[in-house]
Amino acid sequence: MNPIFNESQDRNRPTVFENLLQTIGHTPIVKLQKIIQNYLPNTQHTFWVKLEYFNPGGSVKDRIAVSIIEQAEKRGHLRPGGTIIEATSGNTGLGLALVAAIKGYKTIFVMPDKISEEKRAILRAYGAKVVITPTAVEPEDPRSYLSVARKLVEMTPQSFYTNQYHNPDNPTQHYQTTGPEIWQQLGDKIDVFVAGAGTGGTISGVGKYLKEQKPSIQIVLADPVGSILYDLYYHKKVVEPPRPYKVEGVGEDMLPENVHFKYVDGAVQVSDKASFLMTRDLISKEGICVGPSSALALCAAMEWSKKLTKPSQILVLFPDNGRAYLSKAFNDTWMKENDFLPSPLRQKTVADLIHARGQSGTLIFADVGERVSEVVKKMKAAGISQLPIFSNGQIVGVIDEGDLLEPLVKGTLKAEEPIIHLMKGNVVFVENNLDLAGLNEHLLKGFVAFVKDGNQIQIITKIDFLNYLGDW
Ligand SMILES: Cc1ncc(COP(=O)(O)O)c(C=O)c1O
Image 1: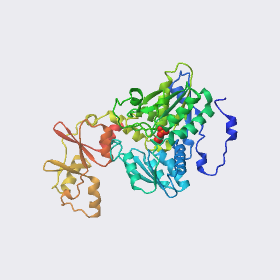
Image 2: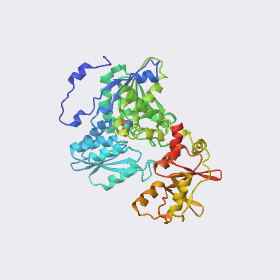
Image 3: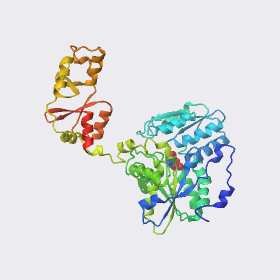
Image 4: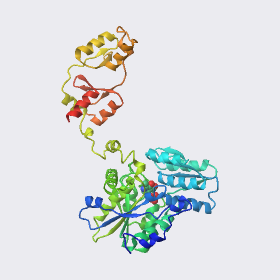
């Protein structure tokens, strides 16, 4: 079989369909090129990726959505007019919402608050109800998304809980469709299959099928740092307690029944940072726009490949589309805030800025009781445009020339009025060791910052910040 292009299979595939559900599956496999040359210039292995974002809902989860619903209909668990409820990190929701729209069911989705706004918005567009729960709680906590979903099922008449974590129809669908598809596409050339596990459906179903065809195949689990699956696989217990991480859809803080380690030959842990940087490289070097869980799986595959002694064909499953992550992986500010991209502002502190600016002398200020005319004189004499206002020895606000000019011009302010009427309370005290990213956040919110430098109080204005950045 030609591993690059399977012509006979392509000729037999329909291209005109009764409805969108029939377009699910048969996703393409593509060979990686530049990115492998960049990361592993001397590798003897070939890396293939299966692009599940070609599914109509944009992810691998369309496959299980349609099968879980159709099985429930067959068993009489879901009847016309019923409500589908699921605890989902988004993609299963999209798949179910799509199936529900076509088949006429109502949907409610419960998801943790780390899930991107784009994913929530699209679910609502399909007509779903979205319930958000906190991420950083134990699975048994009544606020966890699994607990809330169970409660909703109890309270909603004619509801059906799809239960993707424990429903055996999930891995069965991958065993019946994704696995055979891969085998048809790559045949026995495939040596290694790498995927993440959220529910475990993909890796368990595909792993079982591929192992039945080729017992020597290696099935590798890609797990985020912070998930407990890696520990459970290698140590049969939790060594490192679960920690929050940013990659969505994969890794767990509990063991879903659909994770079947008996089909897994090894696991690789990958950091958030490596995953998010690889997400960007995939789109800029290969034109492949996928989410961070795909990039995580590729990082794991590259790491695993270093152990392989003979040239191998490695297939990595890419679960979803990168468009759902525009506000995260593809947003420079978010990437810097999370230290995934270098942020020069994090390297420097308020003390560095004050030092570079030089002592600005004794702080010039006004008292809340002083009159507008006195304040204007003070500003003019010192050549400054902004003045802190004190009351009983404490800074309580600031006034700038704009605050004075406009009401004076309009005639709504008299020169003999006390300044307290105009003062603004947007002041903040910062520490010398605050990094400039932190300072920037205050300034962006419109605050004027003050810092104690020895016995002196120093004012830091936007202009100081700008001068410092300009001199960098
Ligand atoms: C983005 C993403 N990647 C990977 C997975 C993992 O797939 P599975 O649930 O089959 O283990 C999921 C599952 O939710 C997902 O949403």
